[in-house]
Image 1 (cartoon, rainbow, N blue to C red):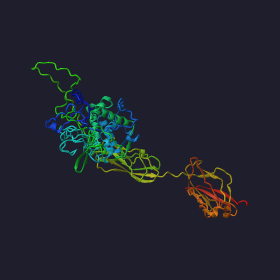
Image 2: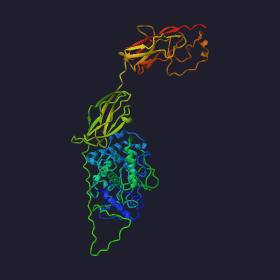
Image 3: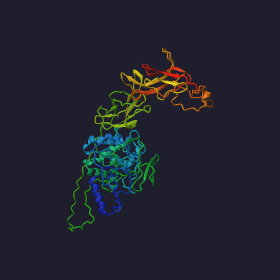
Image 4: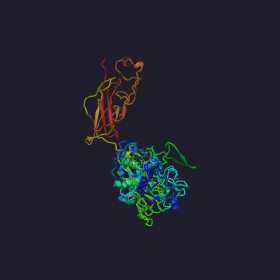
Length: 636
């Protein structure tokens, strides 16, 4: 069985002995790959002995931020971990820790699916994320549609033997659009012969990760699941450091590649957070000079020079056809040959005595796992109508069940829950859309929804990613908090309130306390109004004490009012026509946590006598009337 394409080994393997050692190591750890030439019995010409095995193929070498626990020399390695952990979704960190939402869902979906079918592998989704970062920059920063398919094909260079492996076309251009040679394709960079079950060897790693009944290497859900199956092949246990290293080197046999992937793997295990699709941080540095291949409507063009375009040259999986992991392998794995720096001289033997050859022991090729039945429906679980008070969490869960055509649950299906723009309700971390993978019971439960301050009704929609099935909608209502009430209002002081006409009462002269059934009533809305003395129908008084508008700026005094005696023969600073207008009703007043309210400063005009200030609760059930006495100013 062919493993994922592309090999890179350290440059400088100039001697035949070193090359043989590398080939032997690859033979022991990899599955076969088949090319068109091999299928036809043709053997590509081997490269010169001093040619690097990697052929100068580039890959992203950007490393995580400096606080990454893996140093550049690789002296520390990440602690191997068990399967996916959903709690990592809400962790936060630097921008490099952000993974596009759909890409993140695909990695977690793959790890979850494999944990069910191969629990002994212990595949962490962060390992897929580390490889995806190095291979394609997380599908070019999440440049995928809602189903997880890349918006533009990500293609490697033509594997024509010129600086790369020579692999003749195996898919008729089905995946890479090339009718002469193969190219690495998709966000996880498979070559067609390792992906398709229609390949020359009749097998492939292609998988259906999103339940749409198709296996598409350009789809991140399908590609991530296929990569996970490969990493777990051969009975690997990724909690073992040896198996972990072997799996990564199986993807690309380069120690530098291993250290780069382990750096990102460890970094992602420290915490990640979800970012919108298309907003991921893009890597920029590559090994080698490489090529950039971009597709357009007319075909494929090759661009040389610095990388200023999308990562179509992530070719880490295309393999040298002469390397053990990418050769035709039509006869099974070759036996390992020990390599030494100084090979011993040949021992003389009789010409008629043939040299015995070791019998190769074929390594069993793991069968690609059977794919589950495709998802055909989403079913609502629980109430379709949910209600919460503004500023609180919804108690009821928003949950759906993924089912196949027989009504059985479908595990590992990505479901996206989306909020409309009209609401200020939010999922954790202020998200307006989240993707959840169904469990073994087919259930997908949205994170706790928090009601905003805005009252009203809206709809939460659950959609199966990658499947054209009717969405499920939940009708959601946010109600305003009940208005706190008070059955008693009292002044906190019994001191008489007196001021001279044209002057003001003492600052913060009036403080009231609200209670309800003898307990402190916090947050009670009150209205303060200067009213007339009519006991049956008190209305707003148009003269006497007043408030200044709380938001009105101070208006400059006119020349006429610059002289207080000119404005008021009694020498007081009475309000004039050129001053800001008074207000005798204040709304929006609220008692504090102690049930107290201090009124703003109260001013007087030239009218004297006893006036009334009335405080009223919002429902009008409780009032407090306070007398205000205004006296005549003393003659100078």
